[in-house]
Amino acid sequence: MGNKSSGAKDETAHLAWWQLSLIGVGCTIGTGFFLASSIAIKMTGPSVILAFIMAASATYIVFEALAKMIAKDPQKGSFRTYAKKAYGRWAGFTSGWVYWCSEILIIGSQLTAISLLSKFWFPNVKLWIFASIYAVLGLIVLFIGAKAFGKLESVFAVMKIAAIFMFIVIAILALTGVIGGNPKTEIPQSISEFFPKGFIGFWSALLFAFYAHGGIEVMSIMAIHLKNKEDAPKSGKVMLGLLGLIYVTALSLALLLMPYDKFREDKSPFVEALSGVNNIEFFPHVFTAAIIIAGFSTMSAALFSVTTILVTISEEGDAPKIFSKQTKKKFKMPLPAIALTSTGLVLSIITSLLLPGKVYEYITTAAALMLLYNWLFILIMYHRLVKPTAFDKVKRVIGMILIVSAVSGTLFHQTSRPGFFISLIFLAVIGIVVLLLRKRWKKEETQNSA
Image 1 (tube, rainbow, N blue to C red):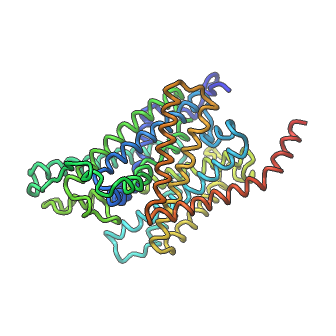
Image 2: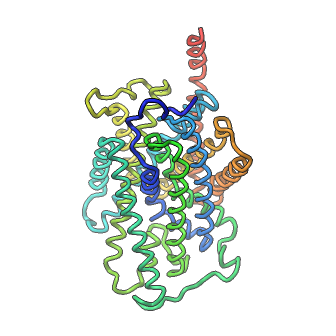
Image 3: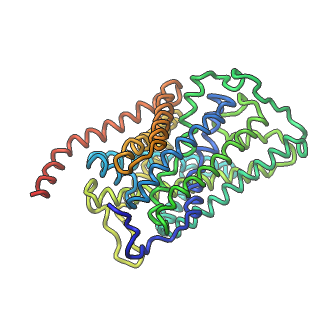
């Protein structure tokens, strides 16, 4: 199938490549970086920098494969449509529903995180009140449509980059003694100091480095709105290059300001790193606001993404047809799909607020793992839809090895191990549904071919 952008003008195509890059940054920088990176630091120490570099490399390999499929054959359903083209209906069904379930869980985790952070200023306000307010605001963002969503995510991206840049500037001033005295910096002098928790600790931390890069799926769905679909790989390269530079610089400075074993898993490493610096009392307030913006941005992006995927799943017969129905007004909205996403949103809020902390972490880990399962499947199906070069084949193998390493590393840490088995349960349920539906699909195929 050729590029659908040729011929008649695509009225939905309005994004320049650099706008898609900003959307990618906006969708990706979230609480996974601002908060969960503390868990990775505690697990592996200074070698967390290497973990983030490896995760960024794998993320680029996955997005490049996806972008090449988009450039060749733009599809509204993105990766799940390509999965169906590559391996059949079962693959599209599985990919779509695995992604939907994982994103709904991630939405709940982002919502709970930003609600907890809001109690920094209003400790007496009930958590469910903040969660409800952010949920309504997220749905409003969903209703404004793809064009306005892209502009809003670009604004969020600039704000988040500005907050991280502020941390970098203050950290450099603190390290050079310009403000708050001259802290003692400890640079690793040996392999054992760089990997203080050994190879197992490093292996376990990989998942959280990958989690901080989650968001390329939304970028791939938005790529259908590019003016030139061939620019998709370029926008991904710029986005991930910028993201990698930001992540590595910020984490390196944080580790120079404070020993790795002093960080706390439930606190932002960047707020913690500057906690001992004098005359910057404003920083925790500003940076907490930035984290809330980051979490809300990521949550809004996930809401947009899962609703779009649900519509395409419905259009292709892998969900009830009602979910692809849209309003007939000027601004077409898939209200039934939004309603189901909203129901999942409400359930995820209730679940995340009722479950004990550790169980909640397990479910969030499972959601991140299911995202990686989709990434792995993208690389597996890539060679069926796009003729790869020899270098593409090498990159594909490297990407698959890195993803499998991140997934398997969860088995070696008590926090993430249960999440691995929970993710397998989700996969098993979807697999059982696929087995039950295969007979019906074969019957439909027979009728269509007759």
